[in-house]
Length: 200
Image (cartoon, helix red, strand yellow):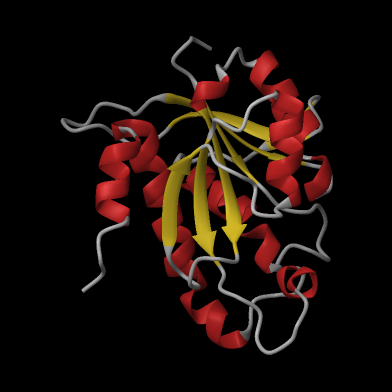
């Protein structure tokens, strides 16, 4: 794939035990993007599942940018190794890396985009920053809200979405997938102007 190829990674933990967890929403979004492209992710030697797609459509109907969709098939705190290997395998510049992940500091259901910055205690981001040698990659931050009462944040992210949250979940996943497409197609500023505007 060429120099303009993007790598979009959704974070999560492997296996059915974790599939419905709040921590796995990044993987859910990447699954939605693959579904939109009419494909599914297949096992890759980089300890990941991956698929090569054209992400979305451009104005006028042309296919969007060449993109590798992926999620690591290891635990969240080991995500960096597979991400680094995928960047090398597909010859993707780290400047074209997008990581989709859950975010405690954003209200549930909201989506925010940024480039660079800290990891906010997120073990998946910490592992990726360490393995790639940079924090300067794009993040699609999918809000899951803060834990209720005195619940520990680690327990909260590793629990399934509540019944109420599950009703909203398809809309949240769809919005995060839209935001990811906007970012890759039109750049960060344009995507932020759309997704960071106050909701009426």
